[in-house]
Length: 82
Image 1 (cartoon, rainbow, N blue to C red):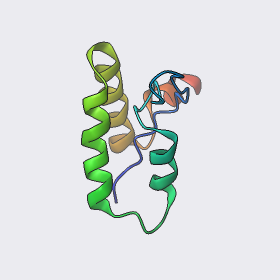
Image 2 (cartoon, one colour; image 1 turned 90 degrees about the horizontal axis):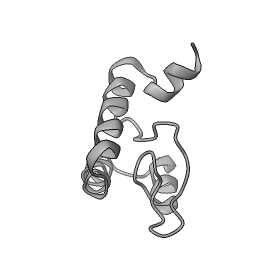
Image 3 (cartoon, helix red, strand yellow; image 1 turned 180 degrees about the horizontal axis):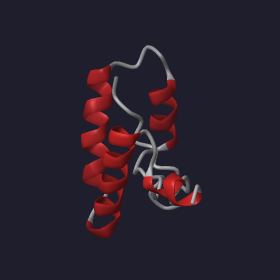
């Protein structure tokens, strides 16, 4: 199973159409939820969204996504629970 790249920072940039948190479009977010979406597509999409992010935004995404994969919770949600 490929873990969703959502890191709970769900705001869409009005110019690019990409989420500030995960870098996905609204259509990509919908596709992740469809049971027929393949793991291959999800792996490719993870690479695509990482190519859209850079600098601190990419670092923040990678840190939070890694924490989500390893611990089941994004860093943002972890902070909210404190």
